[in-house]
Amino acid sequence: MKFATKAIRDGQQPDPTTGSVIVPIYQTANFVFEGVGQPHAYEYSRSANPTRTALEQCLASLEEARFGLAFSSGMAAEDAVLSILRPGDHVVASENLYGGTFRLFEQVWRPRQVSFTYVAGSDPQAFAKAITSCTRLVWVETPANPLLQLVDLRAVAQASRAAGVPLVVDNTFASPFFQRPLTLGASIVVHSTTKYVSGHSDVIGGAVLTSDEKLHEAIKFYQNAVGAVPGPQDCWLTLRGLKTLAVRMKQHEQNALAVAKFLTQQPKVREVIYPGLASHPQHELARSQMDGFGAIVTFRLDGGRADVSRFVKKLKVFLFAESLGGVESLACHPATMSHATMTPEERQRIGITEGTVRLSVGIEDVADLIEDLGQALDPLSR
Ligand SMILES: *Cc1c(COP(=O)(O)O)cnc(C)c1O
Image (spheres, helix red, strand yellow):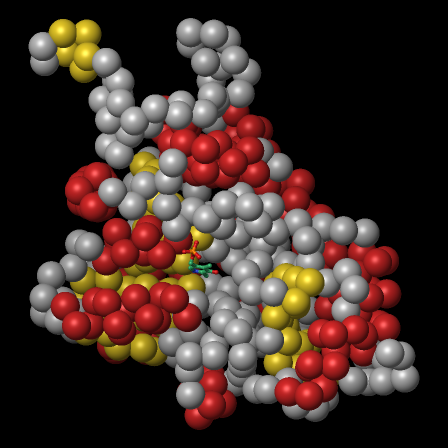
C-alpha cells in the first residue's frame, strides 16, 4: 500500500468487539486476566495499551520499520534511545541539533560519563574521523533547526555501518512523508510527534522506530521500566493527526515554496534559506534523499533585534510562537527563543544572527500568508 493509505489504515483495524471504525481511546490502566498465568494480550497500560499499539504500528509502517515505540514526548523518545549507553561510551553527533537534544546530551548524559563529539553535519568524512572504539551511536538531525542544514544520510550511514555503529536520525522536520531514513541506511529514527506527525499543535509526543530487534528490545525495556509513555487520549489525537499527514505535507510544502520565493524578492530580506530553493547549498542533496523539502523557511531580515520586533508585531496571520509543524503558520526568533540558552558567541558561530527569523509555514490560504508577510515587511505600514 502507498503512504496515504497506510497512514489511514495500518495498525487501525476496526475494533474486534464493536466494529468501531476508529480505534477507541482505551482509557484504562489495567486489563483482566482470564486465569492464573493467563493474561489477555494486554495487562497494564504502562507496558502496552491498544490505542498506543495502533499508533506504534502505524508509525512503524510509515517509516518502513519493523518496530515502533511511542513516548510521552520527543525528548523522552531520545532519552530512551540513549538508555542503551553505559559509562565510558561515546556518541558522534552533528553540531546542528534541536536545543533540547543538546541539553539532554550535555546536562543529563554527559554527567553520566557518556561523551559527545560534535562534527559539521555537511561533512560525511568528519563523522568517520570522529568515530572511536568507544563510539556506540552516531546521531544526526536533518534538515536541522533553524538553518536547515542537511546531512548526507547515505554517506553517514555507510560510515557508521563500516564502524559497526548504529545511526540515529531525528526525522522531525521532514516527517516520514518526505524522508524515510531507514531506507537510506539509518538504524533508528526518532520523532517529536508533537510537530508534523500530530500536526495540530494540541499534543506532545515522541516515537522511536527501528528494524533492529535487539535495539528495539533494549529501548522497549527502558520504555516499560521508566514509563515515559503517552496516555491513550494523546495516542488517539496523534493517530487522528497522522491520518491527514500526506495531504497536510503536500499543502505545507506548496505554501512554503511560494512564501520562500516571495521572500527572495523583498528588499528588506537579505537571505532566504529553504532546501527547495536552487540557491540552497544542499538543494541537490535534498532532492536525492528527500521526497519533498518540508515547510520550514528561515530568512535574515536586514537589521537587528528591533527590526525583528517591529516585523513580528505587525504580523496578523502568522503567530509569534515557538514550535512548528502545526496547520497554523508561526514565526519565531531563534536568538531569543529556541536558542536563547546559547551564548551570543555560540549563536554567532553556528550562524544564528539577531536578524534570523524562522517560519513554520502552515496550510492556510497562501495568498493570506504572503499578504501578511508583505505588509509586515513594508517599512511604511504600521
Ligand atoms: C520539538 C523537537 C524535539 C523535542 O520534542 P518534544 O516533543 O518537544 O519533546 C526534538 N527534536 C526536534 C527536531 C524537535 O523539533
